[in-house]
Length: 127
Image (tube, rainbow, N blue to C red; front, side, top):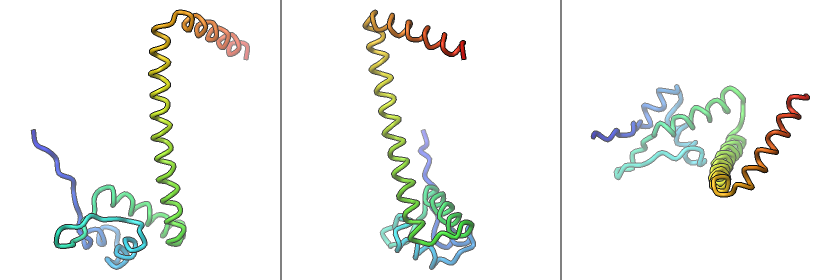
C-alpha cells in the first residue's frame, strides 16, 4: 500500500498563490498567525492546513479590514471553539454509549423511556 505524502509549498509558491509578498508571510509567522514547518536547512514549508489558515487570515485582513491583533484574537477564539466542539462531541458519544448500555441492561429504564416518549409524542401531536 502506497502512503500518500502531504503536499508542501515553499514561501515563494504560497506568496504567488495569494498574490502577496513573501515578507508578508514572514510577518504573519513572526506574529504567530501561521507556523510553517522548517527543513533542516531552515526552509519554510507550508501544508494544506497552513494554506487554509492563510486564506482565512487574508479574508479577515483584505475583505473585512481586521488588523493583526484582531486576527490573532479571532484565530484564538476559533481554535477554542473547535476544541469545545470536539469536547462536546466526545461527551455526547460517552453519554450515548452509557445510555445505550444502561438501556440494554435495565428493563425499567426501557419502560420509563417508552412512557416518556409516548408523552412527548402526545404533546407534539397536540401542538
